[in-house]
Image 1 (cartoon, rainbow, N blue to C red):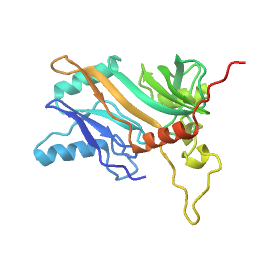
Image 2 (image 1 turned 180 degrees about the vertical axis):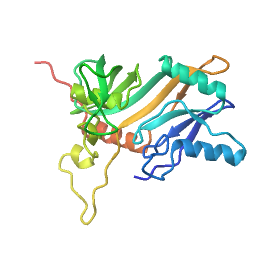
Image 3 (image 1 turned 60 degrees about the horizontal axis):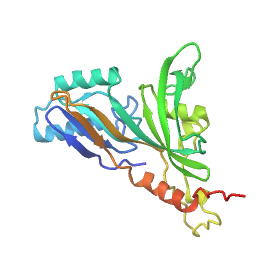
Image 4 (image 1 turned 90 degrees about the vertical axis):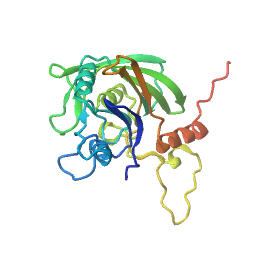
Length: 255
């Protein structure tokens, strides 16, 4: 899947917030020569000032996750933002499309996570070894067999939201690494779906159905509370559109 062009959500002399599209890695992957969000930001800065220093990474998003990502463009910002992330002062809000409908309206998932010894770049739930993770969640919208959840991770472990949801039995709609599907198709939602002759069905969404919607923190210099929001991209909203149309949750009538 080709990543769309990133949009700048906020910029000042100390940091830059980017709306990272799915398919674009936060930093360049060791095994490819593909661009990364870091390279995109640095190219932008150098186009304006050839002597611009390389921006600093203060946190990361999974390659297939869309949404807000921050880069420090000054040393003072790098130190302040890194400290805020380390001390869990940054508030992060994600939207997650999942399979299944949690019966509770909200809750917290507390787990111990460690790197998967059999699959590099993945996490698993550990017992004795690992690091504690904690994620608050809220049921935002429900459908027949699916749900939209608002996730607020309090820690920052690798694939924390993805592993936590799969462990609870509500994997992301699309997430083949953690029990989700490889894509969501209209034929999965619409009864009596008829495929167009001679045409292959296109997926509604074919990447991890997770979006980093909001990030809130203190400005690294002024201390002012900053909140930056990224609207869900087209594939995410398209999946929601057809879930609402073809998988509404019907109310039960009183006996």
